[in-house]
Length: 369
Figure 1 (tube, rainbow, N blue to C red):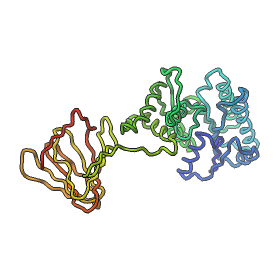
Figure 2: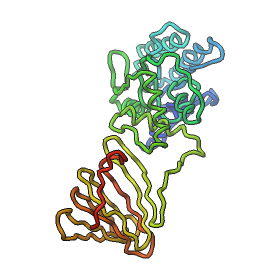
Figure 3: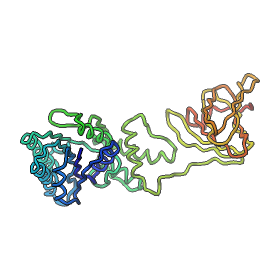
């Protein structure tokens, strides 16, 4: 199958082509504004499906809206008709097509042209009126507030919000890609005359900004955003894609002494905390118990022993652990416990606790095993 993608270097186009290749679609005909129009004619002869994503969002002159969104669509359809090619064609339109402004009017003109083409030729036409689309590779300071906010916050640049109460309807790029490939395979989601992406997020501009700033702060307080919230998860992935390339890494606070180190890695409000403990050879750490706090220990390097004793009994239990055989050891409540490095090198243990450490309520009582 030959798949023509116009606007191939644009935000949706780049993501779509990448996903088409992931799904083993190899005959992709890429056309962008820098391409030669003669190439378009050749592609229109070969195409078995057209993703028409090319368009103008922020031209220097208003008349470029109509030229880019209506005029190019007209050229595309004329070329298809020239070769008697009535393959299905998908059009990327906008909810702005319902508005009386130069951009919306140009999008509406493109829609009407395509619908007329479908009636005239019998070709299947699929028109998507996209709301705001967000995700990786979207150009900041262009046509997406989300892209601009993510870029500016990540680069410590100011942002401007005129009205934080404005409601935004957004679709995530991965959901757009899923729907477009469904359309390619004849499984589009259509309502009345228009196709649409099923998953739409509605949220205020202020809430979006607050989330993005919280993502930036999460490095400082070692927290993880709410991944159970689909929008928060997708927005966080988007934000990370705008990080400066020399700032992918960040430091953690290592609590170091002669015994080794203890470093908090991640904290969540509802899934506990993950830390990394490094013990020097011969060192024993712990010797405490908890009422409610529980933990999981995973030795990933070195070898040692984890000892337990129920606080009101004398019997000591031993679990020998090694990075050569990964196994998780639960630390039940009511047992004083310690961990000793039995090897000749540092022992590294990943530790999970069911709650983030609260110095006001540590729930930790020191008793020798």
